[in-house]
Image (cartoon, rainbow, N blue to C red; front, side):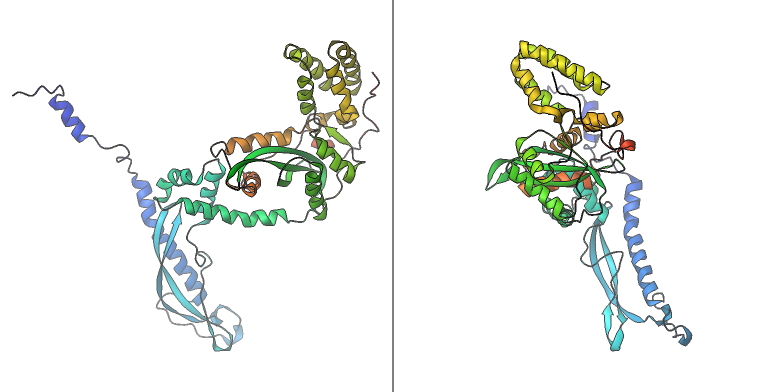
Length: 424
């Protein structure tokens, strides 16, 4: 019987000669570099030990100089073998032969020499830990971090390793939460909350992260607090503010809030006399919620003409026109605007150059958006504390950066006596 195969002999030979995908991605530069890493690390540690013993390997102990007893020649000790150490870095896993030595101490005793370059029990370089934590902070879960970095680390990183690296971050997190704030030159606070889903008691639960940003007198924004709470109640906000005051935070000169009842009650009890700006973006959403869909575009146009006017006199005129128009067309919209009172226009007491940064809580809203983008792949975070710590770590690790507020050059200027006249 003859074969009816449709594949030509030339195609078969090409298929047999084909190399599996990625098998031909050998890079002699990378391979050569990783082969020399072990030699470099061992040479560096040997040099460190030679400096401690003041002699090379197999060298004689130097004679003591009586005129310079405190000099390096006074240091003495002896080598006593080697031990094997495994180290993981961005170069992969390498096995290192570590030299051992005993150094002479007081009263005829000796102490074990310790390398400052490779600490005791260190299994990964700081750069490797930074790479692992950075991949996790970028929004990748522990298993995906392991797979994504397997080529870099030669498959030596497990999901448990990623978890251990992340737990090491917690020490810095605890220190940050307890740091004193008395020396922070904070002149302005921006406060808002965001909702995240976490796992509590084996069930997905919604919690609120209460975030406080500070603005230094040089205009630089800085994260002061991020706390996980059950909601934006007055008690929850008061607990966050009391902790800041306890750590030395000075009374701010200006506040920017989202307009939540709980936050305003907490601030009124603590800093009732501090000028407070209610976020104009949040109020815009409130106005639209009181109007039918077909009027949203018209409401937005009138509102923006008022809020983004170039002078306090123009804002005052547009506000009067807004109230008169919408009292007749949709009274609920006019009532909602009047409910905000003069707190919606406190920014007019500032120099015009600061209006853009003082009108809204957008500085925090942008952080919220970036945070949620990073955790999108995880859906539900493992715990409430992890959510707050991850928010902080994104900033601490430089994954998210904050610039100075607009108009920071005029932050030292005093506020005007009062905002616009609210008479309609």
